[in-house]
Length: 147
Image (cartoon, rainbow, N blue to C red):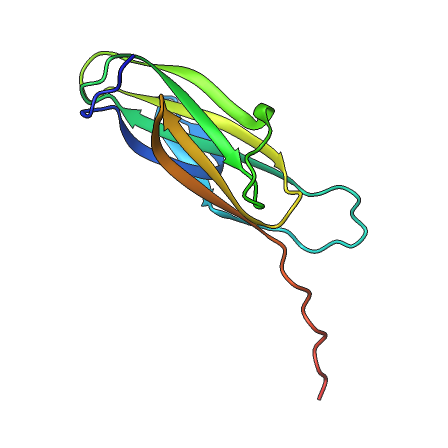
């Protein structure tokens, strides 16, 4: 469906460690993050695993009907991620302008390289936002000088 200049509107987009949903349907985001720090481990044979939740919320505005959401990961090297790391789903907007759609998407990825990963959020062919996620491996600290 053709997208209107009058919606849908991006209300929120962020990574968090988890989301809680209360009995009344209200969501609470726990530990909103944009940087993941890993300790250097010379004995590790596998790259560290990142497990987060991506929360995206839209408000309809004047938009109605089906719209395709696509989230595309870009690796720290700048290369696009493999096709299996691309998430696509159909969102349906209906009702009044203040009605919305929320997407709660688990993100599990191996952090094969330290650096800045980007997650582009598209609605149809329109870029709605880009979310940065930095994977950091701190340099080893020199030993304390006893003098």
